[in-house]
Image (cartoon, rainbow, N blue to C red; front, side, top):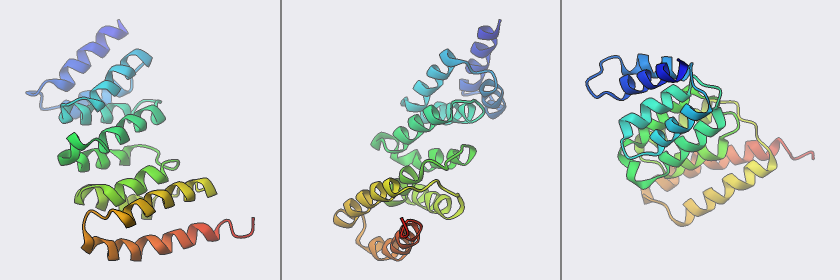
Amino acid sequence: MMQEEIERLLIKMCDPEEKEAFFYADKLGKLLDDQSKDRLIELVKGENWEHGYLAARALSNAPFNEEALDAIFETINNKIHRAHQGAFVQILELFDLSERFVDIFKVYLFGNYKASTLAKAYLDEIEFDITPRTIRKAEKHWNHYLHNPEEEGSLAVKKMEVEPMFSEMKELFNGE
């Protein structure tokens, strides 16, 4: 019975004529089990960005935070989804991102304009769990960006934002 309801909601959510797709995505997320979670993760990573977005929304209502985030970040970083990257970064606001500083930082550095802007807001607003390892991983991405900036004009702006960020994070561990 539950599988039939999940299937019905999935069909309604993915119906391009459906005006209440968000409603069905939210309802579906509350019923997810392991099997249906895997189907939604495949939708997130699939080629239809609208289905992927709705699947990510459904997953935000389910207890599979880390697996869902892995799929969403994979999609964000996939070049074929560059045009819709901002939508997937926006859906991240529905998830617990406290363990995802490096992923958000990478989107800030390498994302399109909307994705980068949203990622910067997350970096400013979320209280992340920072460790020395987190800082080292973020610095690796920063060094890659410094040597491969996508736009020369953005390098100076990002330097002004990132260098104080690293200083603050490193101060947290100076006494250790």
